[in-house]
Length: 433
Image (cartoon, rainbow, N blue to C red; front, side):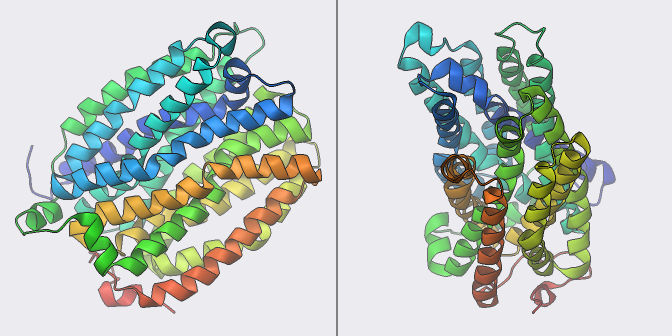
């Protein structure tokens, strides 16, 4: 294989390896969200369904507790030893906890050990994902600089390929004619595809940016981030906070909302959720490419403004109790989430220099995701149970949109921007007021 970055085959290989590796990892990560109601009944003791669902979301959220630790570990490896090394091991190790979940006996058989082992497995999954999501984008964007927004959107959308695969497996294995243990099959399959991810990542090459920085003496990446790029670090945390609220409302909460609060079956809830995820996957590259034209900053301002009114429309449509209205609500919410997530990697890439980019972007982002990604389904379920007001999720999302716009307006003007591209936007033009 040629090592010239201008080689089209090499660029295609770099992008495809990032997309496929990210999709494989998010297939494994999403499965617990898809099967949260089943996992709650299998592995937790509860006297009523509401408490059972809360315990299920608690186990789901455990993966977010360790995502910052995973970002720190794999970020250090990525900034010191190479992006390729970090990404190869993050996708490979993901298969271990996924395999354990597929074989784990229920609470009825091993008692309290069942939820303990499940939570530990989720924490291990979070550890691996903490090094994957931002790292895959950093790797691709350091190689491919002509249209960074489009590349950002393709990487963002790739996680949904994995999530959609998990949703599809959930839809199939929760059919009434399937045996009660059929939910274990998607987890076993996830362990196998992690091995595939290892071989995909092995056949990539390191980025030129990293190879140039590797020869220079460097302080510890996290120390450098804190001392020199603190505002960027807080900006990446805020990005993770808002991303977590939007993404995990769409990815994990909506199927439960449609099932438990609107009155459809679990299989129907998963089916309708597929439309929101398809909209997200399709539009991430569109909004990413749009950021190449108007800058990532202006794109994320637009997403914040859309979040103020779109959630109210979507959740109003959900309450109309018709398949068409639910599909339209899902499509709208998928569009909203894509408008933010599509350009996000490009935005984060501009905040940090090469020598600490993997650590700064990943650790900051995953801290934010740890706070809101795991807690959003739990918080929304709790608020709905307490208030019985079906518009609570819409209010919650809109409030977070306002918070995002305020913090973006305060922090971003203080940040020195990095990452020169081959697009029409040069470094100085990335700041748009």
